[in-house]
Image 1 (cartoon, rainbow, N blue to C red):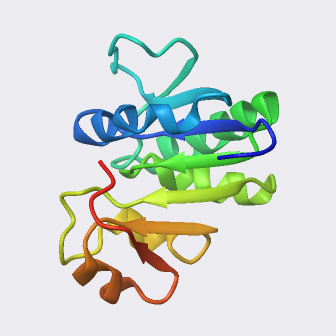
Image 2: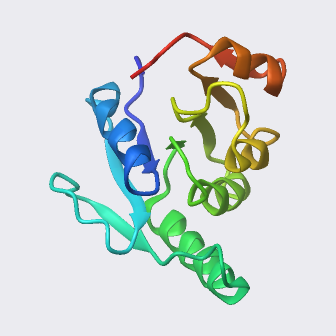
Length: 151
């Protein structure tokens, strides 16, 4: 990301999604970053992080996450929200769009031919949408960019 110093929210669920996000951490050198992930995620090396409760089984939890997301974005004012998935990206992208954030989504490398639910939800509002497999790019449409395996 040459040019101006940006503030980026780096968003992912834990497990493989967070592993992929951490593998791309050097891309954000020279920029201010903070992480958003789930409660209970305690990997080392997340110096500035916010933790959200899981919400996918309870609509009331989803509302609470939307409000907490709005508070985080209001406080941090990121220029960019970057995510490797999974469902935790959806509320941040929807609220981030209202805040005028640029939205960049990288579909998980495990998604080879079938779009993920999160990918399908955020594809219409993402400013940039990357996939790591050409068959998947064809499934999504013209906005999906495939540069091969990025991780």
